[in-house]
Length: 127
Image 1 (cartoon, rainbow, N blue to C red):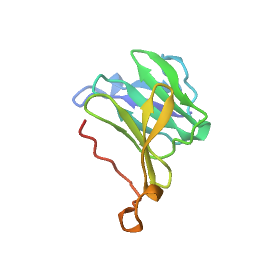
Image 2: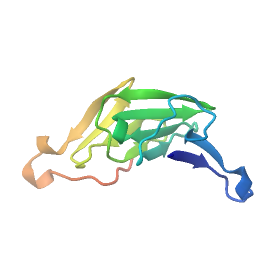
Image 3: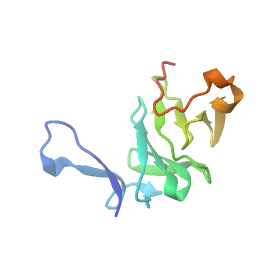
Image 4: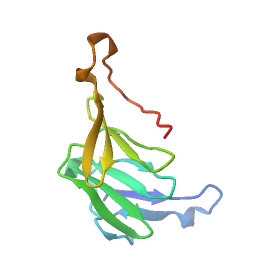
């Protein structure tokens, strides 16, 4: 099975605990695809791009829920210092932010002049 675990540096290996997926005590969504991407918010929420199941999940304090369902969220996730979550498309040509249960495009490469178009693999978020 697939899972995301938490472990604090310096803790004994027996202190590893599943946060999401197989063996996790989380209530709600717990069945993860074989490959996931994640980001952690300043408040400790763990956001998981479960792209094989076409969804964005959130886990915190022992529970999990679907944030965005039926969406292609297969690119990296980035959380700003104030907790806004950004995602990139698989091809890296679109950056969107999560607003409620939807994705709102922030910038799309195709909308820019040819010399300004991009293919993002990482996003640096300051606000």
